[in-house]
Length: 264
Ligand code: KIV
Image 1 (cartoon, helix red, strand yellow):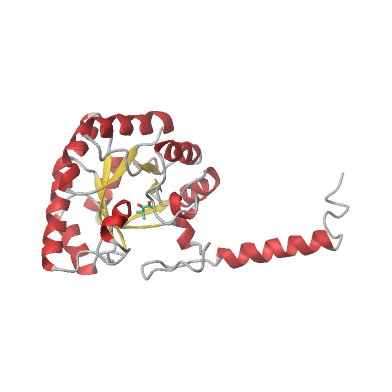
Image 2: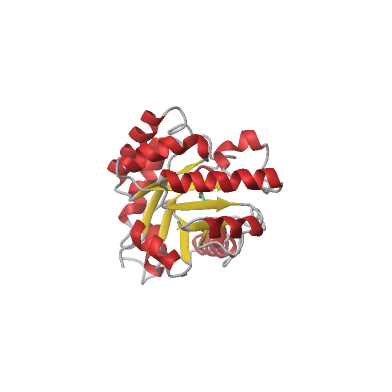
């Protein structure tokens, strides 16, 4: 079934869990989509896991569009959401709406995601007024890493939790169709999920959220050195790939590849 913002919101109404995963290329997007994941996010986490940067800050709008185009080609059913990268929506509302339109026009994705609370509500209104569905992102917002100073748990104090709730309500009012909530205590994850009518998709925000999102590279264990508490590694892809590459290396060195069947 082709997912739309309406079908995603309906899942919350029916109390059915929503699944979301990142993808950055055609092949992976195709696998994730075939399994039936409802939302595929072209996350700016590609800055870390694809480009090798320490943060999501350096990734550009052109790079997000490049990956977005590849992902969209691999998708039949999932809703494709593309992250607006750092610098593409913070300057002013005109820039935000212009860049959101550019991303949707050039990639053919269905929605965009941006990080922040009350301070970006006018941009969210303008983007949704232009007909583009917006997913919000609160809690640990990695584009603000230099303000946070580290990737630690957010909303640990009563003041921070009150602000988080206010921000979440403001995003819903501004027109977001869903919200990602990252690395906050499970208790506040539950409170925000209950307070909002739009779906709340958690990453390190506990089991009460309407859905869950993970970075696909973390789920399949491509980098075993990166394993925050909220990640469940379903596969050790690093060791599987490494073993296959070693076998290939040996086969070539020992004149075992290609064999007769593999030759013309
Ligand atoms: O960029 C990303 O992958 C994200 C998810 C972690 C939600 O924003």
